[in-house]
Image 1 (cartoon, helix red, strand yellow):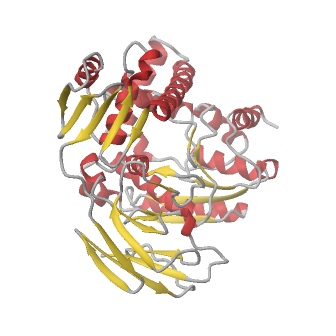
Image 2 (tube, helix red, strand yellow):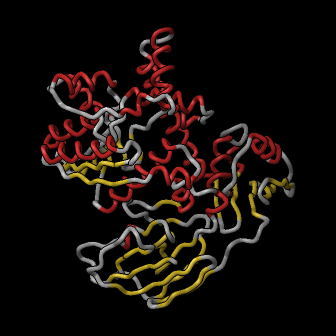
Image 3 (tube, one colour):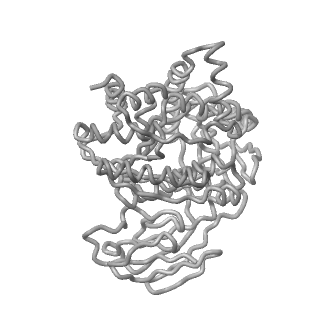
Length: 451
């Protein structure tokens, strides 16, 4: 076994990235890193007791060169006997429509489609071949863009289904391995163009840093990245503990118990930030921290106004946050065979053929009706609402789910949910519950249509 291979195996074990009998999907561009990833798991799939498949995205940005990348990956996977999915992406149109850069559009489309196919094909882990140098570039790019703490923590080793087992390697190690083993790979000519910010950092800034400041900048920032991620994880767990112990919610308000001041001298800013972003759906600012800690010292009955029509007032042992605006309480009942209008949505529920195939082009979802009844309810989601997103085995707060999808705060409250037997089975237009997914044992199927 080569030293580089053992390094990756140790890294996978250290962070418990892969477990026996998992289905792995490798994102294969055809470049050096992803080709190394493919050969690595081809060689060690028996060691990890896993099944591997690959996916190639044709970004249609480099004309003939993009098509040649696709042909190369197809030939490589045929040679190794690995199943390959190919997805064509219209990056330029997506970038124009969403007013974002080509780089950002390509990244968003890749991850969006990786998530889709992972659910459709029952993939347990998605593997991207990012290396240590990529992590360095990401940290510097985020630093120069004025990113927050999470941006400075670099590329996560794992996040939900996505794992990055090659962050422990530098690009040079990968290239040497491929050259020694006479393994071909593709070179992306656009990597030479400093028109893209990441390329400018890679081609112009980092060589100067390595020459004049620190030749081991990649190792240094990788350690920094790991330490910062550990700190973020610790803080997230601490905030979660404080939320569970000192925060309670109803449909109309959030209550923060001031008993936490027996532990802390002031209300922690990270706790307030969580309350603002996940419960009140507004951005948290330094002035809010100062206002609320002043309010905590005042007598019962005192109140202050916050942004976005939110007030906070002091009660005996707590601070109450409440919205001044009218809550979205509308709800509509709907039965199988009916179509109902719900504000800007038209939703239809009909029984379907169990053999019907899902089409990504149509706005509908297919769900199992085996454990449901004929009475459905459409309403807006409420604080505390949870469901089990398709592909996950645990419940997740609707608020957290929408935040992860980067739904703007002013739009989040306007997303309805479909309920059956007091359980949320569909966040309309976004995701069904894992509890109602189709299986081989499904006998009755219902189609949820959105117009």
